[in-house]
Amino acid sequence: MSHVSPGEAPVDGETFVAALRGAAPYVHAHHGRTVVIVIPGEVCQRPDIERLLGDIALLHSLGVRLVLVHGARPQIERELAIRGIEPVYDGDLRVTDHRAMEAVKAAVGVLRMDLEARLSASRSVSVRHESQPRVVGGSWVTAKPVGVRGGVDHQLTGEVRRVDIAQIRQAVSQGQIVLLSPIGYSPTGETFNLRNADIAESVAIGLGADKLIFVLESEPARWRAGLGSGDAGQLSLSAAAPLVSSHGSQLGPEDRNCIRAGIAAVTGGVGRVHLIGTQGHSPLLRELYTRDGSGLMIADEDDYESIRGATVDDARAIAELIAPLEARGILRARSLEQLELDIDTFSVIVRDGMVIACNALIDYPQEQAAEFACVVVHPSYRRRDLAAALLRAARTQARSRGYQRLFALTTATPDWFLEHGFRPGTRADLPEERRRSYDEARASKVLILASP
Image (cartoon, rainbow, N blue to C red):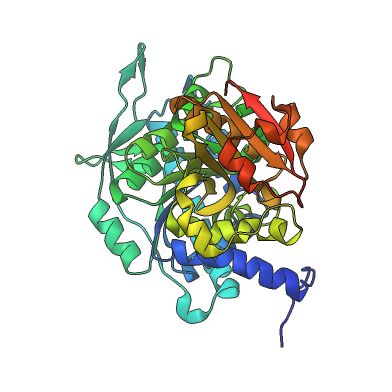
């Protein structure tokens, strides 16, 4: 018998099965992987922090190796106010004298103990007892002073000198959650106030983490349209780099610093960097276990969502993609065997390993022409101009081969082709070989694109 927790709406069987099937590849992919999660002090003081910590506990129970790095900016500000100390900043970097450092230690110590207690409580209700990990930490971050910059002595504000990666790797390999605070220690016994993003960057690079995740209050999902990341929520390194500058950026200094650290992490070998918010239902889980995620991702790899030539391994996915249109008579039926034989003519758009669009480009070199055929986009990814992207790639291929024209045959979407520069043609405009195979019964319209 299934049970629904208080306050949760029941889920119908079909929705549950679909969600489970959709998440299963990600459960498998993330199992045994190392993920560094950064939680700023602003998020730590939210009343719903238990939900985030419960989601983190669930990640651990699913076999994810976790390092958490927390911030403490508002907590430090509050402690300074209690002590009657005026905060001092140089730009967005705190200047920490000895009195301020005592406030930093107090604020960070209390917050750390609070997080450990809340995480333990989250574990007790989120996962089975035997899956409950220990939260561990240590003096694993060695720091050095920022020093004098622009004539300003930052005193006990520091930066990361070294991280004891071996100890952290051993802890996560033993199933422990590592919790790191924004504090570093010098070999001479001094304590320094550090930025959590800097610690996370160093740890993620040192571990060779698969993912570095920044939880932000500013809801990165809302940045998508303005940043040109599209529905995919993906930023390349070149697109993310300008966001670090304060000139013309709509982002605050903390967000810019997280992006800076994220870019450095990807450049240093971290697989992907994710920027997520706190709104909606479990954005952390949605970012990791759904194909479209909930925030923004910075990645160096070109093929997260890219056009490439199809391979034999893609044949079955292409067959599944085009099958509904074949059943409706919109596309000519192709067997899997025929697809495998023709696979060199196909291009695909792959998103995170899933084929979401395809087309075939069939050569007629004797007549310097090519057919733009079998253009299909997955229903979940329509209205994103993926077909237009396939056409642009096909035109580039045709030009590189010295062809003078593209043509297409369609029974259902002539308007789309006309909107993209094709003109109406006739059967007589087809290459001779294609005229012989033209199916009169389908009565396909002929569209011509000269000078591709």
